[in-house]
Each structure stands twice: as C-alpha cells, then as structure tokens.
Length: 131
Figure 1 (tube, one colour):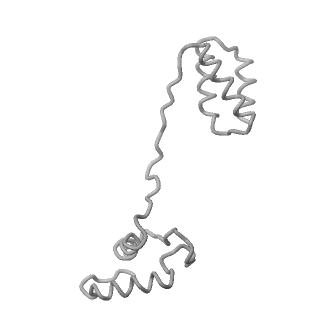
Figure 2 (cartoon, helix red, strand yellow; figure 1 turned 180 degrees about the vertical axis):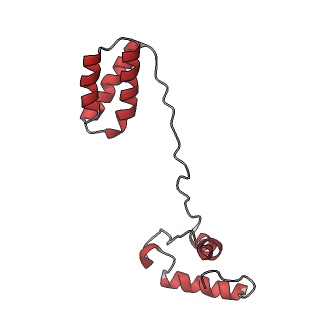
Figure 3 (cartoon, one colour; figure 1 turned 60 degrees about the vertical axis):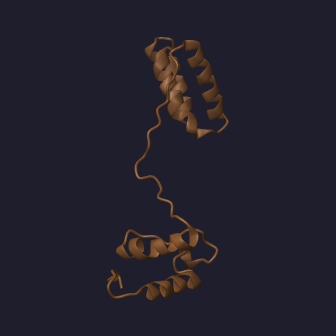
C-alpha cells in the first residue's frame, strides 16, 4: 500500500517486512546489496515505515543541506596583506584551484575601492580570475 494504515498491520508484520526489505536489498539504492545508500523518497510510506527500519538496521540517514549556508570571509583592510593574499590566491588559481574565485574578486574590489589598484589592472586580473 502507498499509505498503510497503522491500525491494520502488527509489530510482527512490520518485523517481517523489515526482514524482507533487508534480504532483498529493496531499501538500498539500485537494489544493490553492497550499497550503503538508502533508496529514499518524500512519500508517506518511506518516512513512516521504511526510513525507521533503515535507521534500525544501518543507522541514521543523512539529511543533506536544507539551505545553502553562506560563509562570511573577513578580509584585512591592510593593503600589503591584501596584495599578499591576492598573490597567493592567483597562484592557487593558476595551479587549477577554482575555489578561490570569490575571495580573489572580493580582494580586488577592496583594492580598487581603496584606490590601490588601477582599473586596467583590475580588468586584467579579473580576466585571469574569471577564466
């Protein structure tokens, strides 16, 4: 049933169902016995019956991120520290690290705001960062 009535099945029925799910790997992603990942859904049956069985057998199920957490990066206002950090970030970018882009842009924006970087240099560095 898609939405089983709790008044109809017994604890024994639930235990039998749990045994069937485990032996057939029906709860596992792709019905693969080697998988550690549950076959999940947002449905009533999964939430109320299958997920609790999975958690009894294998432990808790991960929830993932509900909302994207924003990280606050505090950058120094000291120009020398900004330039030193920017050099490091650009070297990291040139080595293939794509995760430095936002911080490098923020530092360039700050250097431009403090009038420590010219607009032509800003554009040149942006072309490197945004590649």
